[in-house]
Image 1 (spheres, helix red, strand yellow):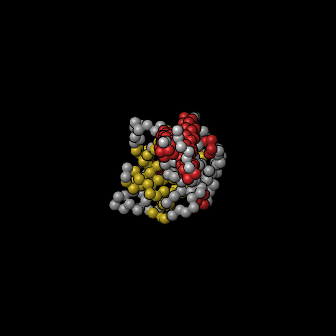
Image 2 (tube, one colour):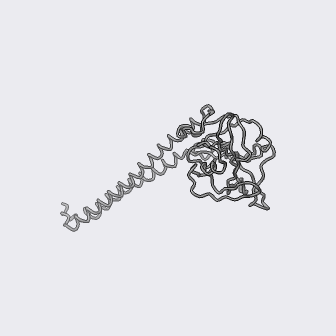
Image 3 (cartoon, helix red, strand yellow):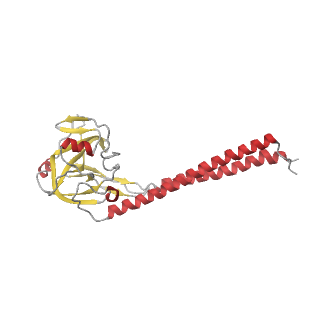
Length: 276
């Protein structure tokens, strides 16, 4: 026969069950949150994959629906503006200092410019603070009609493009003149428009390859390639679904362990110890 638990014992029992219940609820909720994040990432991953695989578009307006057109391929005819050119600082190519080249592209018959990420240029190791000159063939092509084939960036640019830049919302940009080029510490579409004194599109296009991959560690690494004098570094847009599922499994496991520990502690302290 089990003896009745005294009043102080009842209070301790209630507090133990309450603490255990709170911890179980917290860990289980975190597991559910990670499961929800995995579902969100899967939805985003699927949308990006469909956009990257869709046929190219040729927008004729400076303003497009970025929520639905991010990661779409783009094809336009027009000219690069030799004066609409800036460098973005603090970039690297295989560990070597570089700058990222952003240049305005004017579609034929349009009155606005599209900021285009053309790729990266290496700096001189002997003078790494000096901005590199543009390739000669690029300077010549600036005067000719050329085709633009790239990828439209999302509102929040990913690492393959203008690394972690909220387009049009940069609060502070450090600027300096190097070797005749404007070198910025960051990029903002609004600042780019002020710098040029011309209308600029609400979207940015990258010429660097954007690749959709899974979380698999078996994927072959992307190679750095030199295209028309620029270095292109393909950065995969990771799915990250498996990571969130792994976190969810850990939280659910911890929740189950806490349930068992709470029941074991209650049995040992309040029932087994009260047996005659």
